[in-house]
Length: 188
Image (cartoon, rainbow, N blue to C red; front, top):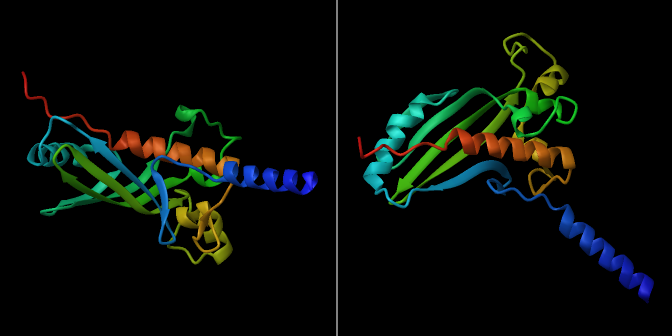
């Protein structure tokens, strides 16, 4: 009886600690995406909107910025994640993290906060020519969909892998820093 109880406890403990936990990377409806809410206690919705309009178009690798009445959209176009800045080395990261990051950005704001969501994240090798007639195998080695990389069972659950967890932490740190913007100074 003790043996069965010990094995059950070991399996439960292993399962509980093997789940990948990210602060800002999420899995919902079979999609893996980044979502972070930035708090600015002293700003109202109009001030946050002005701050976003001024800052977002100036961010490196953020293109196609559009401001609609209740949502801003943009694209991340060929961003390089500096995994070394976050403690990684070329030998410790999966190949895809060295590729360029592409994704769709949406930003929603209200009093005291705004939320950034990055969906459809793709990692693509900048040296790979998409216009040539490459085989599916060649494309698979040069372009990675983040949902496919970080999930299993067609997006039903997260993969549990130490290197993927580290890579996810690099991704969320990069995106968090990218969209951390300074409020407009009211004083001169």
